[in-house]
Amino acid sequence: MTHRNWKIALTASPVKCNGAPLLLCGDLAAACRLAVEYECQGVEIHIRRAEDVDTTALMHLLADYGLQVPTLGTGMAAADGLSFASPHSEVRAQTVERVRGHIALAAQIGSAVTIG
Image (cartoon, rainbow, N blue to C red; front, side, top):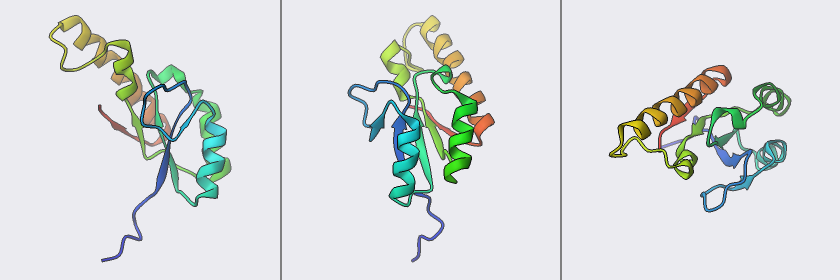
């Protein structure tokens, strides 16, 4: 069985990420350089909110390095107390709104969204 169609990506976040299972935190340009050095095809980006990413700068980085963002991770929003499983309807509604921002960003950059 061959896996030639598998895409390999490293994980990164443009924001401080204490305790998150991420390889790189804070500098997406450095993450892109490292991804290319390691012969990855992309950078999986984890964010608390869509506004954590400068979309224009990210698009330039991806084009410059020939990379993709296979998925945006949403789990960092839990640090803000957000959860789809919250017993409080207000928290669930805030979570929906936050993830809508992730989805809108993903649509702009051609990415999927990982919930959780």
